[in-house]
Length: 195
Image (tube, rainbow, N blue to C red; front, side, top):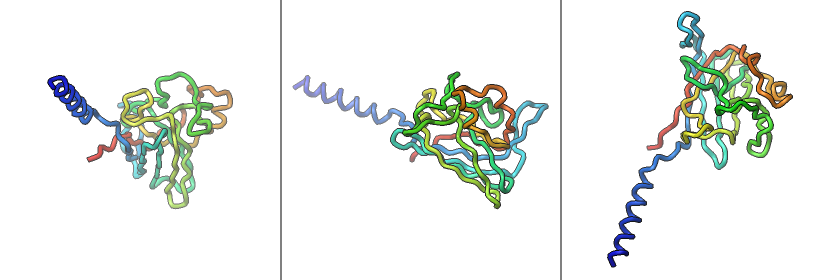
């Protein structure tokens, strides 16, 4: 009888401790603001009416992101990437701390087709100054603490597009020549905590 009660107590404590384990979030957001680089402070600050938002949703085996940009120049196009750092000091393109290209990496049944793990897409802006894009990525996670975790990273919109196909021609990282595209908007990727 005692061993039965002891086993029941251990099972109850195990179940209680499982309830307290943090769950990784199922969604995350990023709200964009226009940014401009300040040579004196070597940081970025808010500078314009550029706006936008992104919603990241955890699905079975991948993360789906939907991005909307507002108040951009009509009929323009802009590359979007995940960067290391924050919006005051966004670093380089996030690549899971790896020095390899992800061009040929499987992503939801097809090749990723972009050199960096954090490359998203070129976003086309319509005649009213708004643009939208959606993407699925099996390379990202939300709130796991792993190298694939995008929570806390900077989601950056650049002034011009990127040629992801050209960049992937040799399945290599583009290097410093890739860094000349001015950052014009940024939002930090933040986990949405369920109630």
